[in-house]
Structure formats: structure tokens, C-alpha cells
Length: 508
RNA sequence: GCCGCGUUCGUCUAAGGGCUAGGACACCACCCUUUCACGGUGGUGAUACGGGUUCGAAUCCCGUACGCGGUACCA
Image 1 (cartoon, rainbow, N blue to C red):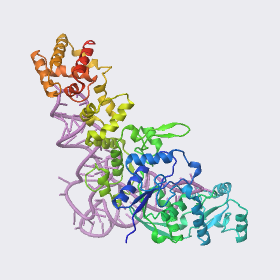
Image 2: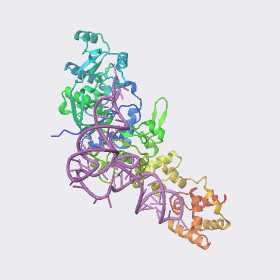
Image 3: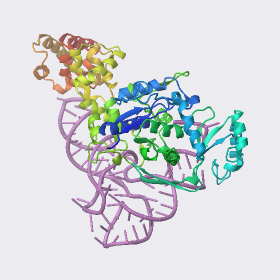
Image 4: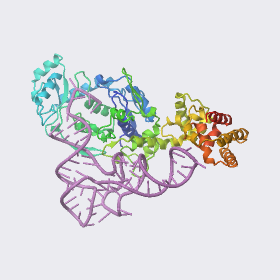
């Protein structure tokens, strides 16, 4: 019987979750759901110096917003708790010690300054970053170079030390990546990575292997930046005797900055004026705020859809997918190998499409909230009409404010320059008639009737409708935009319409 | 430097030895709309380079170039 699929997203809580991170979550989630498996959220907080308060809560909130809730997490609990590596600290040491006993790892007593001077000493033009590997192992302060007694004594004396993996001098490690196919490395070119730090915490390398094993992870998806250390992890699975349970790997392509090259960073967003984080992130202490997609007016459906398409497609021309469709159609072997430059214009296009295809009921909650932030209150009935009228001209949820404000508030400014040059007494008089016509109109809720009546009136006065339609629009809206004028008039009501016409007439 | 991974319109991508290299975003033009959008039609625009293999290569192989990632007691 095949093992139950279990995947995990394992971020370290150091700040806001950016595009690449959310996409990794997405692919994990889609794969798990599609395979009827479990999706685990594990917090990799082994570096206490980088811990940022609030970052973990941000991750929960973010996954919730995106609709990618994990089955197991520090928050939700689960059969393999704890899910926070700092709380699993005591677990890791035994495995590191086991590796030392097996001769696959060793104690290293080198102090930070010693390592620094080692690197200084061996640094050359050809080799700018010398590695701690088999070539220098014997020259360092570790249990390979020291005698057994010396090592034992230092251990007994409590001399601070780390445990490093002993990478073989010349072996080939090969594994199959679900995206890239067969990948191999020569172990002699990989350094003796630290497994257990002096503070007793594991490094990522040890923790990821131990936890993936203990948590019965079957498929491990992560960013491409991890590919170079994959041989260490593969070896660890082997040395720990767990080779048969090693997950299948997939190293996801990176999301690149739009201009030039390189991994997308928060800085690029600031520089180029687009968000990189899923939601607003405020750095504790400095109160430095970075805008997120959510607050900018993105719908989670669109955000997730856009992210899914950044490096994956189903082979057809379809670009708009619901989460359910993605669950069905996603496949790791259709994920691209190459990195993708992020295009904010395309991201906005996705959102626009989603606003257009979403029904009023779906949009109402969000629009209501955004309106609230801008001091606009409305009845549900009116809101329904307004949203239906303006949604197709809103790219972002926040656009509803500008696109619909005039439905609820009388304009305070008017684009009079668009009217004045062609204004005359005849038009002034015409609008006087319009007012009385409107006041006596009986079927106010039928925009086409209003329009026909208006046009008939214009014809009777020898005025071309086109000459007075724009002025009417500006009287009601304030500017040259928005849905059909008579649709607007019908929604804002007879009284308000007349009031707005009168107000502008006085200014002309 | 070394190791690894990549490379199709400006951008995201399709095409897994065989039509004129297809679609989307963006851009341009026209149409629609007596506003602004939406929408519609059309257009500009790509297989990094060089060698092979083959009747035939974007596709397979080799090399080169370029890019990215890694090279921490960070993840």
C-alpha cells in the first residue's frame, strides 16, 4: 500500500511572507489536496538571533487569507506536535551523536575567530571562499584531528563545540528531483556542514531531515536555493538509516525581480512600487511598514491564481483557475525549471479578471470594509446595485472607492473645465427644464425611460443630446468617468439628482 | 574561483523530431461606447551563439556565452 502523502511548508519566522514563500505553500497545498494527503506547517525557528516577534502569527493569518490552511501546525496541533523546532530542540542531539558514533560526523571545537582566520588564510583569488572540508579537516580543531583522549577531555570540560557532517572525499550523490530529473553532486566539493550548533540547536540541515522523517513527510518541496545542499540532506537520510523513507524532492524555480535579474526581494518592491509581501508587514520596533497585496486590494483568489501561473500551467490556454480547479489540475511535472520574473501588470490583470467574474455577494464584504475605511456607509440594497454597476472598471478592490464614491457622497469638486467652454444660456435653460422633468418623472427606477425622456427634451429644445450628456455626468459624478449617467441617477434617487444638478448650475 | 541549476516575443508561457513557432500581459491602431472602463478586430514582437545527429531540430548530443543559486554555528 502506498504511503499517505504528507507535505510540509517550513518557513522561518523572520518577517513577512513574500511571493516565493506563498507560492511554495500553494504548491504544497495543491499537491496534498490532490493526493488526498496532509499539509503540515512547521516553524523552523532554530536561529534565535533571527527570530522576529509576530512573524509566526503573520504566517497563520496569511495562509488563512489565501485559503491554504494547514492540517497540522503549531496553532492547530496534530499527531506529530510540537511543530515548532525550538520546542523540539532536545530531539535533535541524539541523532547528531549517533552520526558521530557511526563515524559520519564529528565534533568541532573551532571558535568563530578561528574559523574566520582560517578563511582569511586560505582565501585566494581562485578560491574566494575556502570550505571546511576533507582537505582541511585534519588541520582544524576537531575530533578527526585530535586524539580520542583530547576530544573526550574537551567534551568533559564543556568546551563549546558543534557537530559537523563528515562529507566523503569522493562520492557521487544522485537523486531524482520531480522537476529537474536526475541531479548529481560530488561529495568532495561539498563542505562539512554544521549539523548541531554550539547552543545545542540543530541547523536547518539536521532539523529538516529529522523532522521530515519523524513527521512522515513523503514529498519535500522547497525553493531552488536549497538545491546545492540537497546532497547533504540525501546523505543524512542514508546515514541515519532512513533511506527507504526519504521524501521525493522538488526544487521550485525562483521568482525573479522584474528588471534585471536576481531573486525578488522586498527592496525591489519598494524600489519599483509594487508589493512583495502577501499582507502588510510592520517590522517590530522600527514600525517600518511594507504594503501587502491584501491591503492593496487584491482578492485572495486572484493572488493565488496569479502565483500558481508563475511557473506552472496546465498545457492549455486557460489562465483563470479557481482553487478547486487548481487542486484537480496541478502537477509537479508541469512546473517550469527556469525562474520567472514577476510582472505586477499581469498580477493586476488577474485581479481585474477576478473582480469581474466574482458575483456581487462575494465582493460585498470586502467592498463594505474598504468603504468603511473611507467613511462611506451604505445599505446592502444600494451596495448591491453599485457593485454590479462599477465592478468591471475596478482593477483593485480599493478602486471601488474612487469608482463608486459619488453614489454615496455628493461630489465636492467638478471638472467644470470640461463644461464651461461650450456652456451657454440655452443649455442653462435646458437644465432648468430637465429639473422639472425629473421632478415629475414617475418611473424613476427605469434608467432607459429617464434617458429617453432626457433626449426627447433635448430634441424639443434643438439641442444635441451629446452636448448635454457630458455636463449631466459631471453634475452627478464630478468627473468624466463611471457607468451610464441614467443608471447613476436611478441609484442615487430623484431628490439627490436634482440637488446635484442645481448645485452645479449655480457654478456655471 | 569552484559546484549546481537554468536560457522560446519586453514579461508569463505553449509546442516532448514534422503546418506559417500558438496564447496571455503590456504596447500600438481601429471598432464599440454621445464619459471612463469593459468588450471586439488587427498589428509590432522570440527559439542566446556555434558545432554535430537527422530527410527534417526550439525539441536530442557537445561546446561556448550569459544569467541565477550555493559556497555561514542563516534559513
